[in-house]
Amino acid sequence: MSSLAGYNAKMKRKNRAAIWLLLMFTLTSCASGEFHLPTIVPLPSRAPLTSPTPSPVLPPTHTLAPSLTSLPTATQTPEPITYAVTDKDDMFGVALRFGVSLEALKTANPSVIPNLMGVGTVLNIPITPTPAAIGASQGSPTQTPDPFSPLRLVGVPVCYADAFGGAYCFAQLENISQNPVENPSARFTLASANSAPLEMDGILPLNILPAGEILPVVAYFPASLSVGFEVSAQVQDWLPVMPDDNRYLSVKLTAEPFTPAPNTHFAEARGEVSLSSGEADYLWVLGVIYDQDGQVLGMRRWEAAAPLSAGSSIPFSFNIYSMQGDIKTLKLFVEAHSKTP
Image (cartoon, rainbow, N blue to C red; front, side):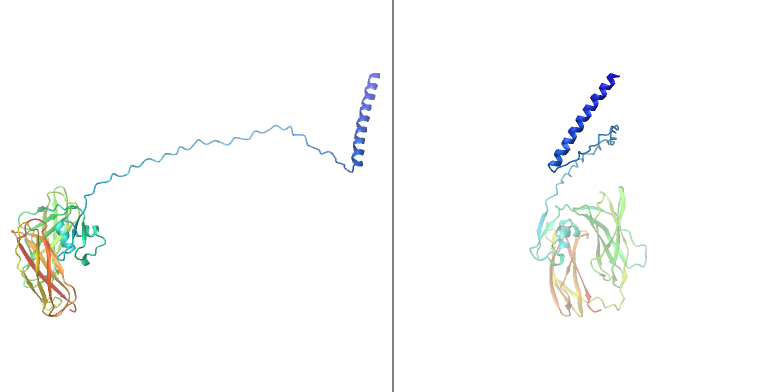
């Protein structure tokens, strides 16, 4: 009991000391004009810490490295050759001379206007030409099944390859009637054992085939052709010309004599044309060259400046180039169309 009383007395003394110290601190603060209540700082919570849920880690995406694309190997293109135009040239004639298609020649010279080429104009010839005869049908040409047709084929058609694998094909049409016909055509067929047959309509370089005349029709096959094909032709279309038709004018043609020169692959046509009456919106002179067997080797159409009036006389001079072989004969044909039929 005495122990417990002693313990209590001891605790009272400690409490009185603590109260005295607090009172002294308060009085001191008031005396200095400053009084601050102690800041109550909350004790840290003893709640268990929650670990954050880790975000799922996606496996890395495997991006394919860009594959290396090899550049195409440059194909060596044959170096173009050039040709300086003379006063006797046109683009069609130059194309025939070098064994290339007219379209290929135009493509190789995009800045050149075909009908306005001046003397000295330099044309790029796409590649070195290697023209050669690549096929001709054997025997007589296929005739039209129409017994009343005014046209028939003469001789056999022939084709000449150009340097692009295409071919110019010629067939000769004869008007066996007593009247001219307009816009005659023939269908060419190229047949080969190794490929499907190809067909193309050949047209006359003039609009009119006069009675009793023989003129060639021409077609160009731009596709690559098989070796060893055979060509045949069939009369296709034509239109009659009425006796009172005055759309075409009478033209007088005077030509200088032609003398073939050995080892020469072009013929020079010279002469003069004149209108007897009327006014023409165009006047054409067609030159056709043939070999010793009468086969067509090439052609060219010359065009006079229009319009032309009656009594006008115009000289002409132009070259016709052979697709292959030596030239034996040159023939000229003329046509004028009335400006006011």
